[in-house]
Length: 189
Length: 189
DNA sequence: ACCTGAACACCGTTCAAGT
DNA sequence: ACCTGAACACCGTTCAAGT
Image (tube, rainbow over all chains, first blue to last red; front, side):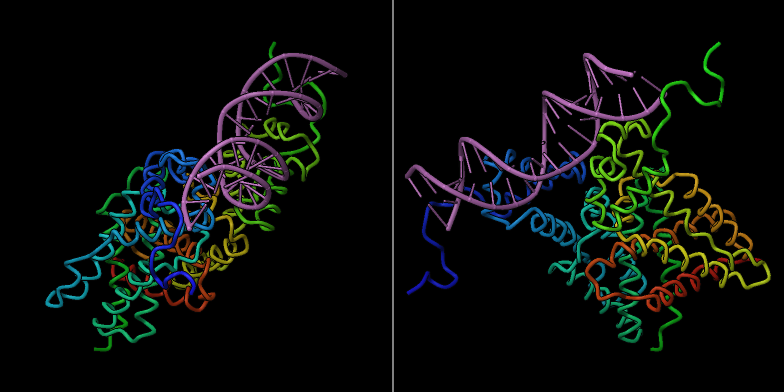
């Protein structure tokens, strides 16, 4: 028989977990931005040789993808789940929460750019936004377009935060509302 | 007397121009994306030693900033200048033109992320958008906010284009129009 | 299976030297 | 003033070897 399906594999106990690697990567990201996230830096942080990282992830790109998805997953909206509230408030809550979490790790946007953004948390977020907009009365196509619009705006917004005097939450909220005004005209229910 | 103000300085003829360096950087960007834009790659492309690049730019960041600004400057809208056309068409022309030029150099967005985006062409673009929106009847504050919204959306939109099945110009145009719907409500004139 | 040491082919940047 | 050769401190990744 081969190794027990889904069970622990033989060999020495692994000294790390994938989460340890991501913790180290995130602390490097927050300390020095996207360029500070290096395989060698992560290895030093967790106390292994640089190539030991390849036991946990196939390459650096995989680490970055997992890290981005973790940051995306930190944004867990709660006011958005309350179906008694108006749809605009619910969507606004998700968008503000997402921006807050991305702003907390500014370098994360620099890691997103070239990647597909198709991790489990990214998909869940996209589905959540589409559902909220569909509940608001948008057609499936318009809901998908609206979710894409909201996501593009928050990413671009953080990307622009670099050298600006901080536009702040008020500016972001204003833009968000113009965006919701535009989507409101698409409702049919 | 010191060196003639604004004139040519003494010493050997320089074998390159800043534009040569940027041409090489742009061709590397188009061929291999943001990670392919390296000082050593540029030097090889133009036929000098790696450190000779530092005669033309103080460091790599300066090369990247100049490159981004050049790409931004390529977007020169003409339909937008026709004051006889409705404001929505004029803004739409600028946004579509900008997206087209950024899409032509997809890696460019990866170079924008951490930088201030305050080059001369970037400022000219921002001013142009603000003027268009002010002409449409928006207050100065709303026009500035609208320009920021449009810029954030186009950048985020390109950033998301990575792994998606190409959303295409139609999708972008739809999002743009929702955005303009939202801005239309801010008009007072 | 997991980890290490050593190596390979890169990278940005600096320095001393040549013209 | 401009350019080069050499070096420094990095980088991601691979390979052979140890347990």
